[in-house]
Length: 195
Length: 239
Image (tube, rainbow over all chains, first blue to last red; front, side, top):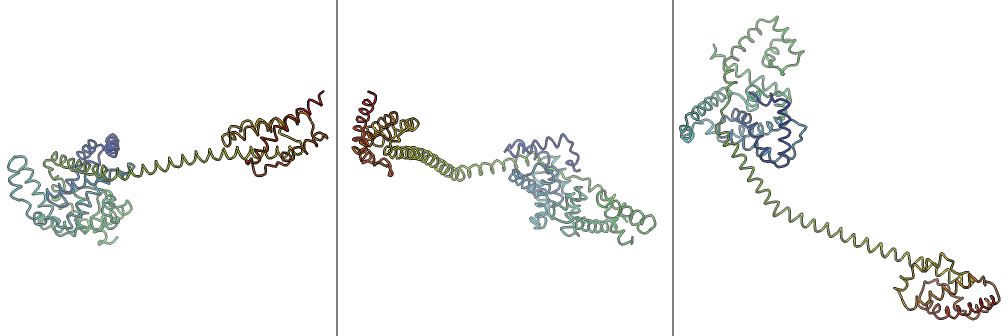
């Protein structure tokens, strides 16, 4: 699921080269970076905000910020850690603000339906996304924002614990505590269904 | 390990969540605790229900359109930034460049002027100092040596620039007279005492205040006559 973790040495070298070119103002190189990491950032944002449009907004905002701050990026650090931290923070903020809350809880608007029906595959994808959003929302409904974000990042995005702590500005013990409570609550939610 | 703690730790059994020592203690507890073992089994069962959800990846429809939208916003941001650069930053930079260039040019010109003035002043000081000594030496009939004369010759053009008519004549006479006196070794002869009496102003020259106009006049007028008398004296002595 986390494609970036499996990047080979060659990929890293290529990415470093792309970053160097981006820092020199090469937008073509940046386009390649966007294409490489867009799916992961989208998935992360979608799972956090449970809304396709909000997720796309977050993806856009993340990459705009990355481009704006590219000159400050230290090439000795891992690019994806920096990228995901920006995305996580934007998504977490959006989730906490409850922006577009009405749409979040009624995520199948007439406009979506119209646009989706124009293409069979699109419709299928839209339905899949809607179902997924519904499942995540119902599963995490009883969680606090912190528990929710930690659970999503760890269990759905499979992000390493230290990266989660770093991205959210939390201590490792706090991440563990939130994760533990989140998993326990979810298990208790699921258990009656299983029985 | 107590069951309450074991239960909490059971929720953190994925790789990277527990350190080895804790994981080992938990394993020992599970080996001797049927209650916690049963809880773990139940957790694994619910985990199976979760797996499809965890594997489900949201579909990023229109990924290409999203990329294009991002690049378009970046292009707009770049245009805005370059406009800002064009209208604000370059103006500031231009003013700063002009100021820096002006300062640099002013400093270079001032430096060059200072060097020229300083060198001229040093040359003139040296010349006047030598002339002062030489003129004073005339009184005791110790005059300019070859080195001093050559120095004077080098700096004569500058003196000429200061006051061409007087200086040139004065220096010529002075140098000539001094040279002859020196080469004749007439320093303390009665003839020289007679010359001293005849040219009291020349003898009294000290040039303490530099090569002023009155000094130049004395050198120009008496220097030539002094030269003639010295030459006569030398010719007489040789005969």
